[in-house]
Length: 111
Picture 1 (tube, one colour):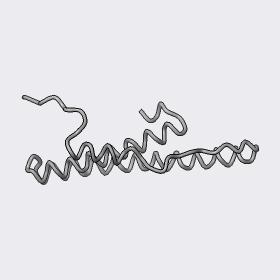
Picture 2 (cartoon, helix red, strand yellow):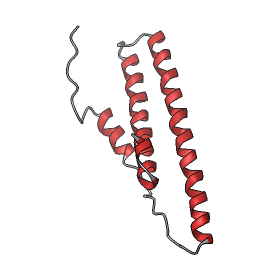
Picture 3 (cartoon, one colour):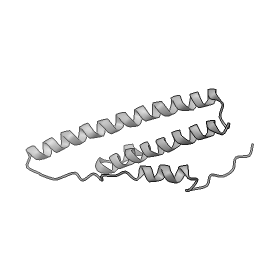
Picture 4 (spheres, one colour):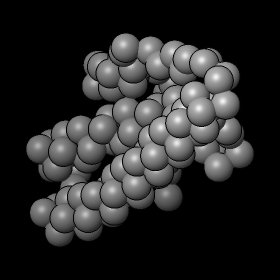
């Protein structure tokens, strides 16, 4: 999804993905605490979530570097446009809502 977006929208999408990943980490821990996942399953999920986190982190760093390069080019050309980035992320609110059981309800799985 983030690959289809450009500039600020891509940064916000990656920030949102990072927030959702934090919520998913919390839910995996919670599932383990309640006995829905074994220690082996938790380890497997945690390793995959860590890999996804490294990917998102790399994409975010790449976007930051690209933004710095574009900013330097714009300043050299005298463009003087500022890049407004919000001070807070919507991701913590999403994480809290998911942690408290709000949001969309998933369909019940029945094998």
